[in-house]
Length: 599
Ligand code: BES
Ligand code: ZN
Image (tube, rainbow, N blue to C red; front, top):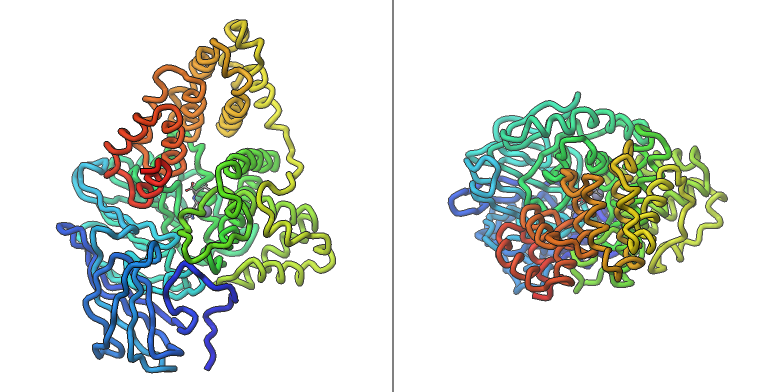
């Protein structure tokens, strides 16, 4: 008997399922959305062959009603909860070595972490309720019993009954039926339903959103989406999924974007009215190759998903806006990497992380795999040269598409493809050294003006003698790209120590915000940097403004550091803001902030 669905030798400690002894061929989900009781109920059918008489699946806060093997009821039991890993569902008396149908009838409960149910009041239109999922990394098991590991991938069929329009991570066939022909891991399952409308944003793309905002969403994305897809196709190969759509969610969506196949989920904070945050779309569509076609086999090798995706995202930006812009985006990424390394435990600053069975992958999440991973790929590109690297990249994505792999397979394939050119790579240092990797040589063309202006503001004499009142004006930043404003604000924040004890510090920073009209920015990335800087500098009224803002956006990238900062300057304000707004946040976000605040 051969069981070929598990090519990676590395064990996924984040699943309780018996994925190593099953050969999974297909999965069908038949679900109906019960809006009154906030329940998803129905059945899942896994077509599989097992090496053992027992099959174990992941579940988390699910109610299991009945299990059938080949249409006959079989015994099952649901174990006690094992932390984030949930409750193992063991099914006995499965025929060994036979391909058959394992069908499980189940429903979700109010504790399921992968779903957020919004009341009409929590939506923009206030007319209908809204439901959306977020499965990565380990929350699919709270939506349906599954082998919840990125190491195995299967095609899906879906039949979803809802009284509102439905979107799932596949394409519609007929009526309430959808399919996903490309094999996908469980974490890429996605569902959303609510009062949704769509508009065209490209040759193969629509944006979906509540009717009240769908026009502004269309404007935000219609200029870039197809160009970005074409840039990615030029770099790699044809987009294999058919259509590429974007769903703009209500503000409690906990991420910037999520690369659900065929339908990227996105935060409304990227609809800024100026098309400046479309790099998030470039990132999510890049996942159509890195992550969705070629997948990390466990969460300890997450850089293979995110590092590659950041690398490709910036290559797309380089194609569309020039190579200096690519470098500049990497400079901003390096700033984020330095900050992340300062706050993360050393183990999770390694490229290859040990995600043990008692470690919740949500706790290991940071910018590190994104930026250290893309820095590593950048290093390899420089080492072997652009054309050799590009040839390797195409071959890699072709060779591993529809599969999952670990860093060791990556290494093996790189060495086999580029040969002697790889001789000097210190693989162990890149994989296992904690902390910052060697810094690449960035082209600093776009950085120089940001650095010079930040030096001017943070010079002790400038602040002490109120010099800025004479020289500072809006023209200091005219013609700047939004990313330059972000980098400038990051630099001022980094150098705040030099002026913080000066009695004029808060008024200098307040003026900086007013003169450059940064305080009122609609761009969430700028607004976030500004609020952080202003709160740290003690600008009056800004900690209240930060508290108000993180009560309106549920994106963890802003919410978590926002609460951590508030906690430092005013714990009472941090705790009371959280208590007042915790039902607004997604369960994943709520749990993380609770940990961050030590509640
Ligand atoms: N796949 C991630 C989001 C994610 C990561 C969800 C880990 C759950 C666990 C997505 O592609 C992502 O990286 N989003 C970023 C976008 C940014 C890097 C452009 C985000 O949400 O900020
Ligand atoms: Zn990503």
